[in-house]
Image (cartoon, rainbow, N blue to C red; front, top):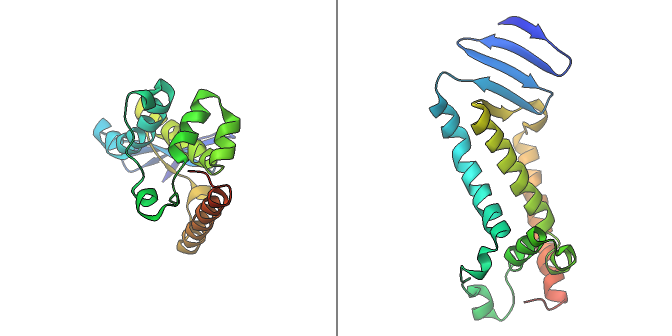
Length: 167
């Protein structure tokens, strides 16, 4: 590996036939030979996060009929994920009070959608394969702990909705 250029924020290296640039400790950018490599990495996450954001901004909830919750129909109680759709639409519409009262966990979900879409859109528009840097590379123990925390947060959000009798 030969060091080409050192700047305070980014380090540019030549790795084999790929150009590699470290953007702080958060992301590594790789210029690949083909744009198809970039599409293969970034298109699906960009669509998966961009479509819900686009639908929430366009007010498609007035056009697209939502199916009634099967969990609510059979049990009489709202499910663990009830309220997320309405809260994300409320955040997009600027009704932040309703979104917070209805489903407080929708805020981190909305922020994650925006971050994932931005990360992948930048990769697609720049033609760079953006991968996680050392700060965002987690060990298997850290991943398991994160999943446990997310599960506990979902259960707490569900308990909150059940206590307030929100349907």
